[in-house]
Length: 444
Image 1 (spheres, rainbow, N blue to C red):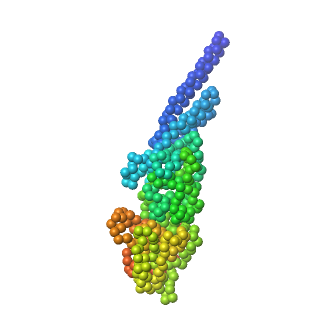
Image 2 (image 1 turned 180 degrees about the horizontal axis):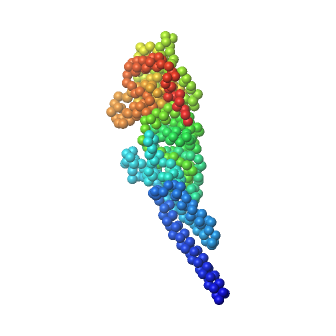
Image 3 (image 1 turned 60 degrees about the horizontal axis):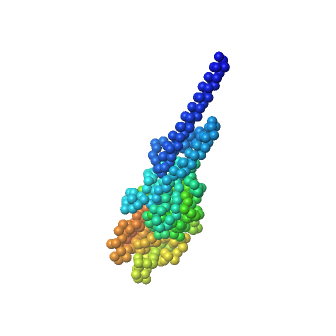
């Protein structure tokens, strides 16, 4: 009887163990297609936070790795990660469904992803984050003429695609509707990254990845690259050595230029860029604005900033004579003519640092107003017949003057008189009463 009982007990335990194995295997088999289905979509929605989502994945990965009841369990774990890797879906960077509305609320760049919106800040995407459920951004392709041939995907860091290269550090990814060569276009594309950095402990990127309509760009214009170098240090623009995929340990994506960035943040960004550019070029404006001539009159510096091309002055000599005469009528006024194309980046910073009033034809060279002190004055002139065809472009430097703390003015004599009165009023105050914004701007 005892032997019979022992045999029955042993048979029962063996059967129970066998049943547990079967249940475990069936559960894992059911789990695999569920996770594969989730990973197949580049952007799926859960209400749980990133930590919970990642914990779920790691928990079941741990079960598969730690279970030692049978030789098939570790193999299933490798298979699960392999399935996740194989199920990564790359989508076109440029979504042609939004080709007609790319500047009207929709974006064709990474169109399946929704921006993060914060008060006073430009819209952005950050990876890995709660929005991406802890997944990394990967980009494949390096086409420079067709953005639909470049693609992106979100992947778990434990299941990077085969042959993927992990790019360590922080990557700034930009897509602009314009370009990175024109001064004004480039600045409006880069300003959001400066604002994001200011809000995030002044983080600097390890590299930049630049797109225009989803098409890869391998360089910035010289002016823009020097400005970014002054603010962030060395600028490495990633050209990708092959088609990839390339996955980024951390990435910030901007795709709306200044977008919804508020005026307060724009003023802070331009103050920082101005200060860092001056420091980069070894320019110390200490005491600037308090200079007087031999008769004790405040010095007013008027600069005529010339350009070449269709929007240049037809008779530059006549224009120069007009401004020289107007300047001579105002006590303390000094006059300078500068040709923007002949100036290096630091020469442009220096000329504009020591300018109170700049007069110039409409054009990208007016972006250099960035380097003038706040409350300086800008006079912009349009070629005959061009204003009627300019569209909203005619307001570009009005907007920039407002966003950088400048005054967009009209006629020289009135402007010079206004600047003279303003400087005399400032001279009567104690300089310690209200520090200039430039004295505290370089906080990064």
